[in-house]
Length: 565
Ligand code: DON
Image 1 (cartoon, rainbow, N blue to C red):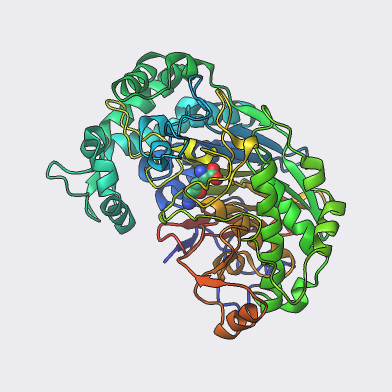
Image 2: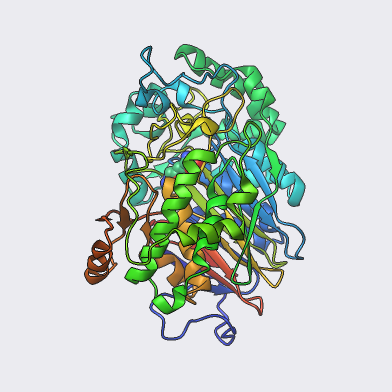
């Protein structure tokens, strides 16, 4: 169960827009600050920062580094991500892109054999799978621009957790059991994450990471140079040289995060801000919302056959465009204006048949990846001034490449798999990519991560985002729809069953909880419906018009928690 704690509850105030009484799911309620992350320890530490007068960015960077310790399968310093910052005073929303980059020695065909066939595991479980990490530079930049704490202080709780250890929850042990083969191939991963006898740390036991503590301490002492040059950089490069990897000292020294303009759209009077390329997330959330705006979704009802049909048809169209057009805008032109325009949404809407599913398989055959335990992590934070941070970061798969940098105690990402290894070939999430997302030196691989902030009447209203690979876009979309169209409180919006379509494979994937007669009606329209495991872990905050904060942690992750004060 998700832990839902409110340090201070003010039950007297039933805010105007909050639907609370008579509901099955209740958000955490508070007035001064709210944190929702996928790990209770990170939530608590970030909340402490807010309580001590820090702002949302101070809390965000503290949480980000803490998650790198407590949730090594996705919290990271060896990966990258995206952050949206929306000031409480209504000033412009800013996006910070700290996505990994391809090393300078990367080549278009590096994941193909001599005959031009893709060698899938090369982009997933080798040293070549790792992009140049961006997290440390991204957090440092975010803190410098919008925080008040020195980097050292934001790192201090993470260093303490790494050095003194923390008591592991059941989910931690389960994760290490599942990833045993992948991690234990590498002596440094075995030594870092397992006991001397090779077994994982058990729930209730204290897990310490002394090498990671030293690495974090070097960052605290030297700033980003403590990661991108000096001993840590040396350890990364030695790791690469031992195993035919590509990342060099120059790649590390040259890594720079970027400030980007977020994608902006408008949906039923709300301003939607989400991540721009090199993520595809914001573009397609806005595109799908533009298509759906023409349908009375509220009248159809949540997860009705009609509602799911239109969502699935819109999702298919967006994911087909994703495969064709999306890539790193520092390298390729992406027709962003067109993709996110109302007119294009309208044109696409006209192609949707109300009664029949349009088969996508005739456009291009998909080959969904069999890999099914992906992991990324999102957190949302709002402070007493109404400033909001929405952050999603990842090392791609659960535990990334499985490769720990020997001597440095952290896992390397396998984000290079998010490039298209060959045009038309699916990646681990079954996503097809084209020329726009081919591997090029220094380029950022396409992402689906979609940290999102919705404003209403110019004020921050909804702060949200999720892990889930290709499903991130549709997960985030549905929370926006659940709040705006279906009028749900934030905990309901986060908890109710979700659906997903990504064009290829041509199927609607649903979570348990969608009724069998809805499924039958969808099948009658020609949809293939597949019930799968839970999708995403969306950590969200809603700010009511009277300023009350509501936190909704996703129960799909047992360690998720929202806390406010
Ligand atoms: O950037 C992306 O879209 C993927 N690397 C994200 C991976 C992911 O979300 C795995 N999580 N559950």
